[in-house]
Image (cartoon, rainbow, N blue to C red):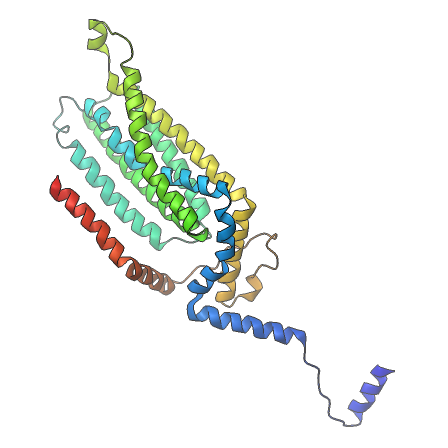
Length: 334
């Protein structure tokens, strides 16, 4: 009856007024959110993720996994500089021995700078997890190659080229790993970032301890005069050190894979993806529920990336100059 009455009113020429619909209210809310994100989507993103950061602070697994990943970030450089005595023994009698350390440190640091710059510019949350895992596996393979090299004796020139190329590749893999780990840790807030930094500091102490233990084990017992002539403690120490480093990198890969399966990780990445889609006007890409499969965030344009890098560089300029000053003082004192 009511339907027939409305039809009669419409047919008789009476003015028809449509009722306000709920979807319009939702659309208005989405537009309001979109406008606020357009003003400064990075600040809004930080506000939206503060709850997840508070939850992650109480989750010890997040902290320890990022601590392990922080150790893995600086392990390549520590492996290179710690194994220098072993490398020099393989260059005995060659003119390359006197300049080996300079070549190694120069090529490693320059490669690290170039690849880290590219890793920073090309960083994207949709690929950081895969990039980090591939970087860890690459470092594991390269360190294992160092382990195998302790069993073979080649010409000094060949060994020199092998170490330099391996160091360049480790610098590249370590750069992409560092950018990816820090990008992911930043989503979990200062607690995860602190764990990464703590891991980077701890790995230096751990590597020194492993070096002392491996050197002591290589000289264990009272060797005879013939054993002293034939023994090569640097090789045995390097073998132990490289083997332990390879095992730790494998453990880091397992820890990273475990992180990707944590519900908290999926919730944080899913919320980041949701906000990114809304910020770019792709409301259809937003997640309806956190339990659903997360969508990769849309890739930022080159202009947006340049603006983000410039904004971060401007915010950190004082700290960057402070770190640079520390290195300058260190070099002058040496």
